[in-house]
Image 1 (cartoon, rainbow, N blue to C red):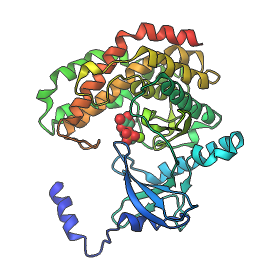
Image 2: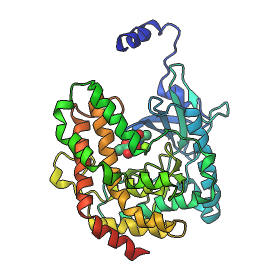
Image 3: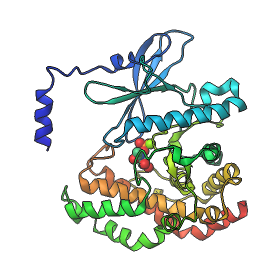
Length: 380
Ligand code: GN1
Ligand code: MG
């Protein structure tokens, strides 16, 4: 396959026009004149660039290449994104019209009026407004960050609770379906494409022994006890932008907004806001679930969702904090075994280091589950 791809690459340059990022930026209906194009730090999937406007009073923009290995249907993804951003702009526009441009994401169309541009190499690009003077965090160093970030993510779901979730398509089918994630892991163990199974026996044993506990939310979903909502599905701490006074501005990274369970948003939030270490911490002693940060996160999340959640959702919210580090570990482990084909990595063992840190976090969460449940009870 790789040889075939390489041949294809060498056979194509005569008629394929490889475009520069600057040229791609010119395909969009931006205002003013774009000068510098700076690479912008983003997540593990897409590539982002900051388009700096040379015209004084005109705004900057964010150009992104959407990873179409991960998002197979970019057309559907952009349709979802248009529906959601317009819906939110309507609500926020009534609440705070003066600060609208820093509080919502807007899709800037191409010069032909489309929501994305496909370049001759088959890459998909989009442009969004650049939110000025924002701050992002990789870790919650202050309970106020956990509270405010959680309130922002909760408010996102809450704002969208008036929308029929089936209006949106699935940008990644089965994204948070644990059974599917586990069957992918099984498959990658069987294939052992990178010859690494022998290195992860302990991790595989941990997955097998934890599956039952981690399936609680999936079981509830299958029974129809928890409703499908419009959820964000990637509520990482670095997907909320703050202003300098630690007030939440805007929730970003809407690629995975689709029908889901509220536990996804609680879960990825707990996973990233309460971790005292890094997502890929090599020192597992650093990785714990901080109960004070958990209290702040749960308070913020419930302050903005209390009014929309049903009693079963609230009662089972605590499970989300264990499931999401666990499932994330399963996903990193699967990618490690497959030879690092999905997540961007910084070194050869990166996905294994990430796996171990996520499993440590899930274990620490499990040992604190009773206390966390008490905290949630005290909040409702
Ligand atoms: C990916 O690209 P980023 O960092 O926003 C992933 C999430 C994971 C996360 C782990 C589409 O998100 O699901 O939770 O990495 N996104 C996709 O850090 O798979
Ligand atoms: Mg993301």
